[in-house]
Amino acid sequence: PRPASQPAGPIPAATPAPFSAGAAKGPAAGTTTGSGAMISLVLAAIGLVLCGPFTTIPGLVIAWRAHSAAKGAGQPTSLATIGLIANAAVTVLVLVGGGLMLLLMILSMAATV
Image: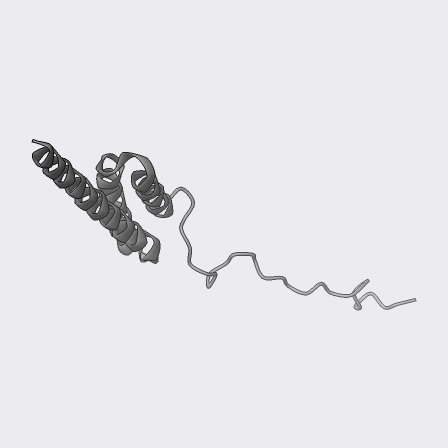
């Protein structure tokens, strides 16, 4: 028989708590900084295909707010920056394209008179 001073079996090793201090930083539960940036990118894509400034201008506002929120929270701002650039580029493209189309319509009306 074994003496009473010895343990009955092996002593289990202490396991660290999962996701304890020192875990990778990421958005906290319930934050929407990434979703605002994604919404702005979706609005830029829709604006390029369908609605033009009716979706890209709100996309600019949403991307700006997402950028500010991410910067304030110490999170990466790259997705929000891409949303800003994409919405600004689509807005410029649509406005310049619309202006050129209007100019060509005026010139064609003047040529037929």
